[in-house]
Image 1 (spheres, rainbow, N blue to C red):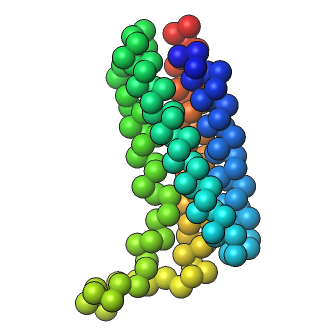
Image 2 (image 1 turned 135 degrees about the vertical axis):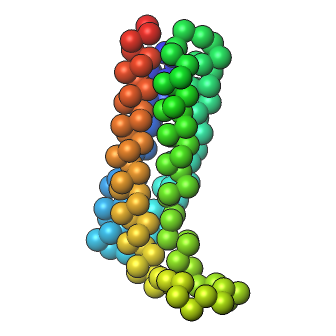
Length: 137
């Protein structure tokens, strides 16, 4: 639990801040989309470390299991929404004429807004987990 509070929680706050800022920059300047993709990859790594730390705290005992697992699932559930614009890629094999296909600038904007929303949600999840761990210590 102290590893989460001393290292992982601050790292998550930094990662969410970077994700939000790069998402805002990408929304304003779509050429930053490549940088956003790199930041998203880094965010996956930080979230993976967060999940491992939470699992260690759960198996170490002393934390409320049900609510902690709920926030653990929330942290993982946010990840597939990053890069959601890939669903708008043109597929040559898709015969559906009503399927929306996004242009490159639209894809960058969708990814940017999704990154900003997920950054806020992930920061809230990390804060709630820190609150739970503070209550246990």
